[in-house]
Image 1 (cartoon, rainbow, N blue to C red):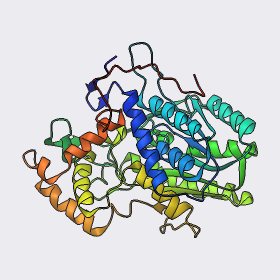
Image 2: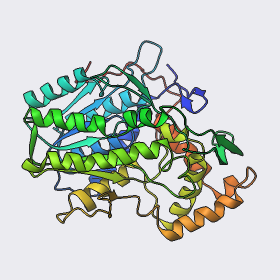
Image 3: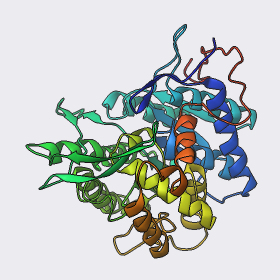
Image 4: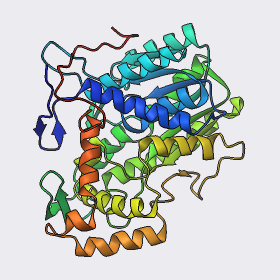
Length: 396
């Protein structure tokens, strides 16, 4: 079939397997070009199919020759209907890992559930024995607590008062004003239940209880802080409370791993185009301005560049892992440089529909967005007939 992007608001309903495969190959080549990393050799990535999780799996495998197990919740293809992009990404990853002689197995299902945890632990026990590194990179708007059966829904809302600021429709380039009403009721508690650290701790407790963590095991979860421009709706909003909980959980997990000399970290990463960030008001405008400036400065990074630097320069540099005063690893350091943020703030004041293509990198934003779904990837023939029925070797 000829596969084209079909949009519904901020979501693309189709994905292109050849484009996803090329995207994965490009990331693999980047990691290989940067040289070997003396990192973990047995790695579990929870949320392994897109974004930072996929980049972590690629960096582990092709930077450190690690055996990897990836957990994700993706939709497989059916005849005439494409899979979700994470499915195609994972199929491409397994194909390339197998060619390279690397162990790679995947588990597809709800990572919040006890069933998927049990299935993953059984796979580790059978094939790997113990894990050296656990990456926690789940991004979901909902979570059913496996112990209580309660369904929690996260919300992106400010706390206390209505938030009003600029945003952009990145498809049309129209800059407008957006207002978001403050949270109410159980919004904060529900958002923490979905996006906080409870599930991360449950995974680590389960792994430790089954003796599946190697001595000195490390675990890393991903977070974001961002600038003052977005803090009312992000870091000081409901999501910020969840991120606070995630970061506090790192200290609790580290305590629980003391007898293994293990460590838990939260890595604060750079703002990037993801399916989630594209739906957050204000963020697309901020990212388009940020990209313009960081590219001009020669310090722009995508997911794979961020994670390769996290591994090579922070986690496995041979030195003590550098953290800020809250114990967080900061690979958002280039984004948050004072000179970069000052330039973004100045452009923010100027940004209108008429000048955004000039002062921002809306074209780069759009390209990155379509790349998420395997479209607009250089070197792919989109006019060619494409088989949508691509399987993941270890699953189907």
